Picture 1 (cartoon, rainbow, N blue to C red):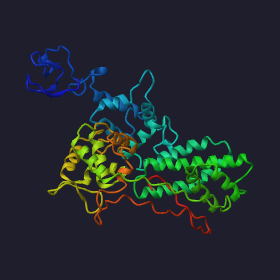
Picture 2: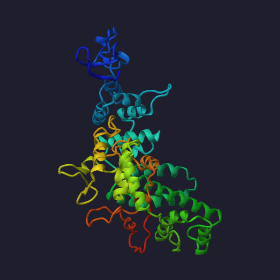
Picture 3: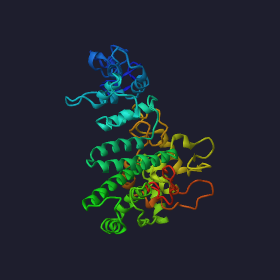
Picture 4: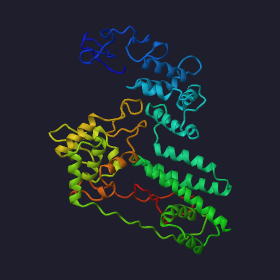
Length: 449
């Protein structure tokens, strides 16, 4: 029912729902002798029919109009761009499944769309922070940003703000909740927004900040059980906690202790810096062998092979690779160039063929999520590329270690080419209270720093 094309029997472009007896070639319904018509009663196109003998696209368009109805029989005017984005997707069957009931239960997306249409849900980012189920709400918010109904905002910041609200609701101690809210509001969120000004925030950075909030809460609960408060904390109390907890927890807690000391909530105490070890890079011989296998062995998924090749060849982090767009591939000259820095980088011929093949065969392009996306690695979320969590296991399945594989480039980078792995994040100055000077503040450390 999804095969459209030129019928070999009558040479007309039609739905090829039948089979020719002699060679089993797809043919149209007339040549196959079907007595049933598959013509849509609304648009006249042939295809799979639903209620009212309407095709999938017409059925989905009517369903969207019903859900976004503002009570006047028309789509709420502010949501017209969203309706256009949804109904123009290449695969409307996916959209129809998204808003249809399953196992007798209403689709979460349908309830959210209906709430938007009736103005029960405000068209603002704050309104989406507490909507449930949160995954459906997050996806809908991304669609609203993509079509311009909501202003664009970094997805990871929005998810962190949502998580923060829900986490604060679970803290029963009033003083602890107030202190952690101040820490997140005046320290973590400003840092996160400044970080987003330099480029998209990674999922690992968001997770790292969430862990900092959790460890700060555990620390406050622990000293409270010992009859202590932050204001009465002494160096020996802190040292006792440090020696009884792993270095990783000390690393996560240090930004909170630094902020609390400079904000006047506790004395200035010393916390030794944690210096994790660095993994050794893979050998040059192994790197060349992996590159040869990725280029010649076509059994692996194309997007994973290309990502692994770029990681090995140019020592780029996965987060940087996944944010490449098709516009970063320059084919105007005799050589294929890839814009990893300035000037663009020449791509060897075997790799260039795979790169261009990926550009022409991108996945996740048939729904409203990324229909017009320029990402070289489009994701399944609106306006977002693939995540490292999705691609990293695929790369490891190809035998390529994601961190040692990019520890050192295959050859010394040329000046100005931008081939070196990204530098550590520069220190950030924290918010300074009025009429108070602050010194030697500890920058937030995250996985992408």
